Image (cartoon, rainbow, N blue to C red):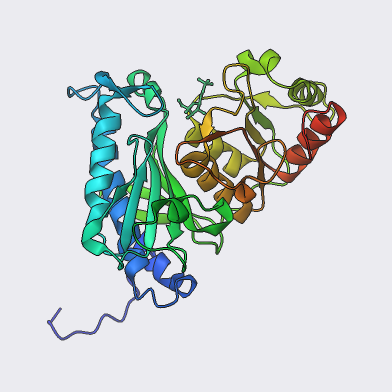
Length: 348
Ligand code: P6P
């Protein structure tokens, strides 16, 4: 075929939409963004590709196991936690639109002074949630939340920038490192899932416009803690077990929030980490675990509360604060609320 022959037959290559292509369609959510948000998100996609490459080979290289350090939560840092944190900080610190980076692994947020006054977005993230599962080859995840700098705050007014309720998120999402690596995010315009194709090193749109089923078949919580939580949660689980919602349920608990939520998002049902004796304010962190998950859940037609009120309405008081998290399909969420009211387990 000569060099000048026009291709008249349609190529046999299926249409592939990457994250960047997709986010450009969503740019309207970022007036004046002029591609800066897609550049920000490309920092997350690059970092998570590097993380997944390490995770996939963890058993072969000296990347498994724990360090001698503990994180701000007092949890022993896994070597992969440290690597994942460093990679995300490195990839995102080059994004000019970012003024603050806050990580589960760092006591204090990182302000990027070279952009004083220029930074528009803060990114709050958990680089590797569920990392204690890495040594036993269980799925783990990365979560992220993006907040715009409030009009009234300066670049160094970290508190007013980070401590915004989750309803102010301009974007949020997670990457689940499971049987495949999948990025799920929303910019407030629906929820979209991209699966990493290792052959070409790109995230490809595989789950456009994800909607959580109205009702699911799975409930997910650490049942060992049930007796230590308010009685309404036991009442709820008993209702599910007894077919009270018109069907049989199965219990599924991976012990990795991102993986447990991802299944709930795609299959429906409910994931719960209620208050317990050990964690009376809940175990999961509000800013970089509950808020991103709640944002995604609501964008997909689900609900997320702390047992009393909507997660996205909670006013944070500190970067690492914890919260109970109950998130899932409308049917199960309505039932758990009924059970909590009936037993006085919720103040609302
Ligand atoms: P438990 C992982 O350590 C984590 O932070 C979440 O990913 C997960 O949902 C939860 O803790 C599991 O906690 O008490 O059931 O082991």
